[in-house]
Image (cartoon, rainbow, N blue to C red):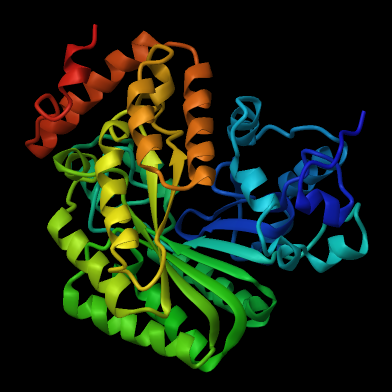
Length: 419
């Protein structure tokens, strides 16, 4: 039986629940891996330079859209949102479906035909390469060249597998060429454009994007770059000057930098190996106080290693907002870690992190943010206790510590003491 339309996107398109704006409007592309998905939560399809132009309408994407039109959850990673919604929380799907500008993100084909499954994207998210200057413990070689170098040095992964997973330099250049060919023809049709890494400030593709928009104004486009802010101040300022110039000249609707940060203190420097919080805070303050035309937000990953020191990060955000040191209100968003599974908070007994969530929610000033965080808490508490994965977590951290000359035990004594 078709369910009632629960949100703005379903209402505007006259489609049933659980139809998702991500499935129709959004595509994530992992260029160096030759992969694409309907969002970064779902399983990926392979793309090649020859098939690149069909990245938004792969057989899997068409099939999952049809499943949703039939009133079914399609699987393939959509369980992430399904589980949060079953827990009473606000999932990525619900958040986007009710976005204030969601009417702008509906593909024209769906506007004309509410059964259309072959459509053109309105939102694009691109991971150009894994070039990165950090190796966060929950990341891997697909998204960090520093991780890749570590993996190769210590023979942690079969080299043939690794070489097949990441495109060769020659094949990557072919894929990149097809990307820019498509982008030149379709950029003006996009409403949202996200660039991730690796670390974009270290990738030449970010600067090619800036040059592209210098020559090809897209005044209706919102561009977002996700950065760890581990950037030399001179390079940081020079790049921000270029970006602010694009915005001031209305070559973009606006530009946002999403500063990646999970929690605070030495625990964060451990989790995001290579991070220097003094440098991060200095660059962050430069961004929010000196560049009023560039929007800013914080985004973090909820893992069992980050939850306990999130309040300290939120206090820094609140200080900026309440003290009016920032030229704008800085929002904070989160997502639950999905891999590696032994870092998921849900492996611990039900209620284990409840006191920590109470502290987080108490620091959050907005009811909407409190509701989202409560949804994450409920989702974590619904997961089955998995003692073997906690043992795996300790084992893997000990292995990482040995390679990197670190020690998790003084920073996470609660984990060491957990029996």
